[in-house]
Image 1: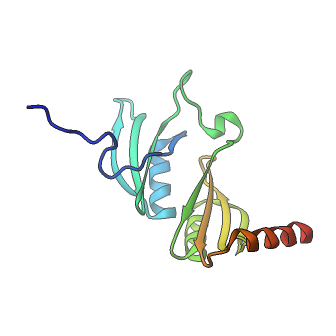
Image 2: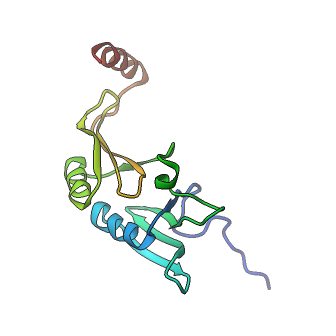
Length: 155
């Protein structure tokens, strides 16, 4: 008898970020210190290069692995990245401080934003950008439009 298997494995969401880094073991340790990540597993080659690993931050999993010549490159090899990760947390001020203490570089200090979040932005030591926020207020689209216009005018 054939077993029924879910097309999306238990514990995963439909979309899962996959980060390519230089020095995946160090990245895993950084994500543990900075964001309280839990390492689920890793698949190292005999030379120590991690071909695939998975971590969990809150209720979300992230996959990651070391860059591979000709296959995947890290933001450090590309001199930047167009991709960032948005992370909702219980206390953005504490989370931001924890991440910077672990080695992240702030690129925008934590502040209250017009869309209802308290929000800051940082770059991890591996070149990935993180947007960290705590939702504080539900804002209607109309009010958000007014606030956005005011914020853009003030900038």
